[in-house]
Image (cartoon, rainbow, N blue to C red; front, top):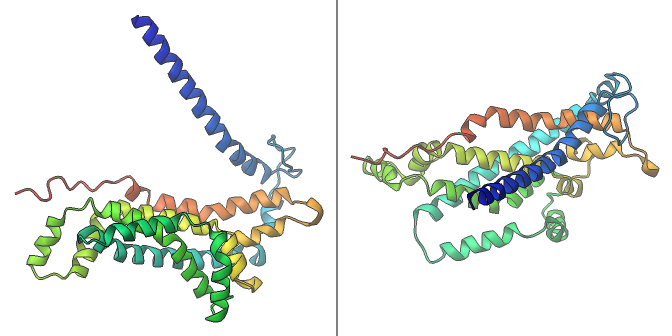
Length: 279
């Protein structure tokens, strides 16, 4: 009987390992294609060893019009949108986490419903609204919509992390004369650093890869971000510059990787507040 149970567990473990390997291969193959095709002079859709070695693909894409200006536009749009999202999410999550009201649950359910709305379903009325208020083809208007689209889920995340900070720490600060805003900025947010880091990374990554929103709201080519300019590598009649596309993809992914590396320590941290309210 014991051998039968052990064999079953071993079989399940092997099946789980095989499934994980399949999932890992599904992620690894596109990455391998990007890395290999970026230096392959005869790159195509196949994942194969390069026929030779060349830097010509990087030389072709590392120009102001193709890469540098769109990347700067992306940094402005996504950086501004992320900053606005984090600030607004913290201000919205604080009363939901610290104060009890009959409206908390309906508000959170409304926020949850907003996260399920597809972006394509609201783009037509948003486009019409932006035309009326003269925000179409403006960087600030696109930043506002980026932040608004990410805010519902950011509020949920921020509130869950904020619930983990003991309220007694704020009460001690209030006793010393601190206001609610001061306790939020000086106590709550520093202690929930991993939560702020998660919201920041999630918001930035989603905005960085968004093609549809800037494509619809921005009309001037000089304002287009890198997520839209990548479309330039897809020519007419199905012609694609695969090598240049792979090289651009590597450059395009670099800011997101750097952001994750810079705040990886905060992501791996914990609150460690077990003894903060004792005594």
